[in-house]
Image (cartoon, rainbow, N blue to C red; front, side, top):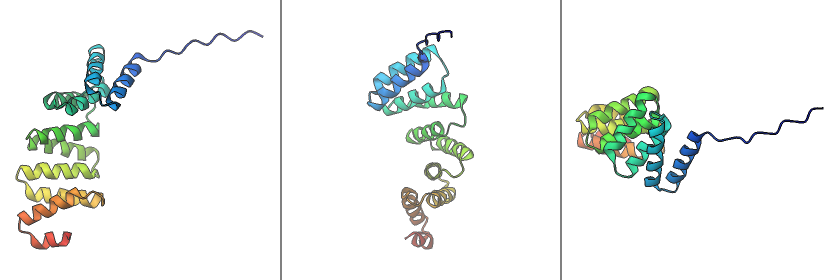
Length: 174
């Protein structure tokens, strides 16, 4: 019989190694290190969706909202149906006092998953900020119906109904 060929040492994919190192830095909450690793990785492999998403996330945790918004948009250009990127982008836009743009992102998120309770809640908040209170009421109701343990939409809905002086509607929530 012929002797078995020696096994070759398996080499890990350099992309996997770099992304794993960045994830370890994120897990340690060392966002500066993660940003450096991800920026270097993206210099070598521009447009890599996972790296763009992770970099956007790190930027947001560092308070670099404009950079995070840009990275989430780049991520969504490559992967428009990436729900976490859509929602995170919407939240950053909402925090950046851009409620109409945020509402558009949350609406896109709901096209991907119409039963996403938090997307309904965030869309309602954005609509409320743009003055579309009736639409906001409907999305708060939908969020509350989809996830019974999610109390924030009920609170927001109660506040909004009281503002609108809809006492029967507010009473029904109590």
